Amino acid sequence: MKKNYDHVIWDFNGTILNDIQIGIESTNLMLSQRGLPVLPDVEAYREVFDFPVEEYYRRLGFDFEKEDYYTVLAPLWVSLYEERRGAAQLFPGVQPLTSALRRAGIAQSILSASDGEMMRRQLQERGALAWFDEVWGNDGIYAHGKSGLAAAWRRAHPADRAVMLGDTVHDFDIARVIGADCILIAAGHHAKERLLTCNTTVVDTLEDCLPLLLG
Image (tube, rainbow, N blue to C red; front, side, top):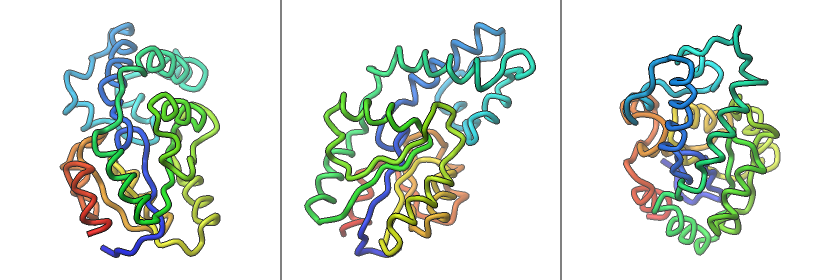
């Protein structure tokens, strides 16, 4: 892995914000209301969650012929998530790592499939918005993925030596779109076994990233 990075690109959900439990609770409420099997635990969730989120919903058994994903299911999930969002906390390693990177003069962006305004609000509520130089998010709630955002980020930063911090296989794919190194943290939305299928560094916590980035 390269060092002397100019820019660290953070994923948001599952990397910065530990929202796994409230996401499962929101999904399970929707599943139970429809008589579908619920996710029994975090491990089961980490095995099935994926991008695009529409396909994840389909895998769970939602019938898009009965309820449209875009007009019914996605807005419903967001409303349930929003009711619970105060329970989601930043991962404990976020503040010390962002501070260390800032002291080292390394720029930091967030790049996420989530709605940009929702992310900014969540960061502001936790006093963390100023820790990041840029926030790149989608314009809407549908979380298609972030390949387009990744390409736009690279056009805005054509010469930056970058590394991506994420928690899913999708984040590894996004790092390749950018032409960045990638560190995957096995504390988020994908099981460690899934992350280990990627040809990149996998660690257990954000604290493990510090020596890799600044060591």
